[in-house]
View 1 (cartoon, rainbow over the protein chains, first blue to last red):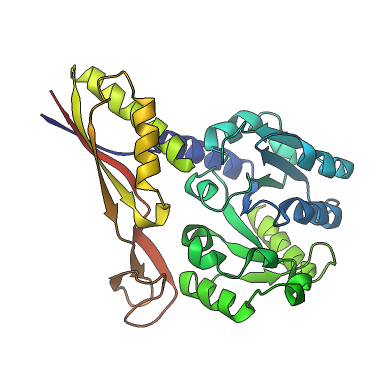
View 2: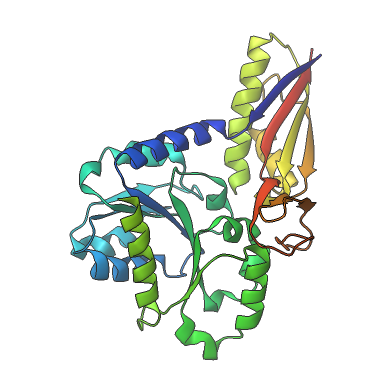
Length: 217
Length: 113
């Protein structure tokens, strides 16, 4: 006999994500789920952002790492609340792990919560954390073909940060090809061309994210 | 590698349903995956088999239907199937489009006795 089920396989994750989203909305906290490959520059972006906006906004960070707290150590100097989630081999964060650590934050005294997901372009984009939006970070050294290969992330992200633009002369990164692939997948997505080490383009990013935070207050 | 987690959540649903329906054997699991979720069927099936080993589900056939990506244009209202990663309206060329199909991770039914 056949038994009809008709259910989202990930509905446990989805239900918890909705709870997280409602909680954060009631506390007026913007949650940004940052997704990239390993080494694209997520932590350096957070260092820069905390340094620049840490006095304007109350920032919190959730560091998702397979193991170690090295990323969190790098952010300690900004004196912001940071919680590390070690996935112990897991390739992505999920809404249950986020929900558990939200108790560690004083949400009434927070404007924005940056979640640094595990470095990976596929798995994290399948798991809703309850974020306000996803942010895709890509570095030029990874190659210009990433949007075409990982359309889900680039379709779902609110913006793309193209990092390490200062290194383009040393790579075979084809900017036209990158933009053309990206715009096919998501014709309306803003792209910020930045160098987190040199500082190029970061002002536009700060302005954009500041507006997003202010709009959610 | 997200296949493993998805296989695990699927196994909970299948085993729970089999228990409630008092099945002694599950012969088939019917699921649908949207093309955008980039599941590798072989890895998924391998993970699922490992998880359900020594249970009433261990010999079940797994039927995976892949669902193509469809979008609806917010400008002219037409819906269309996405080809070659081009997420723009094929009538008016607008990029103001929303995904209406292709992100599914869905269990339709199980069969058993």
